[in-house]
Image 1 (cartoon, rainbow, N blue to C red):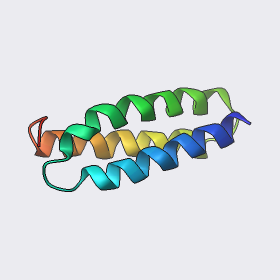
Image 2: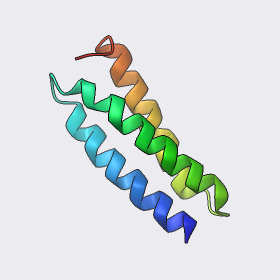
Image 3: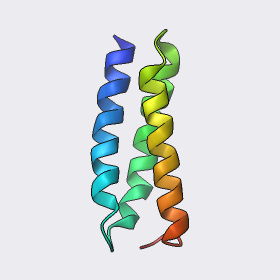
Amino acid sequence: MFALVSLIIGLVALLLAVVAFLPLLGWANWLIIPLALVGAGIGMISRHKAGRNLNIFVIVIGVVRLILGHGIL
């Protein structure tokens, strides 16, 4: 059950991260990264690793996007 919840949170965060790649929407990553952190935490509770890995991937994408946009753009 935790794996499914983690996957759903990860997919929502990934969709939001794709939208945040548009110019001037990089600030949304400040909201997406904590969401993915919650999903990764839930994914660590479960036996399956897919949800945790998806959320870690989204966190990395969000952090890279924040670095490229200097935290704002």
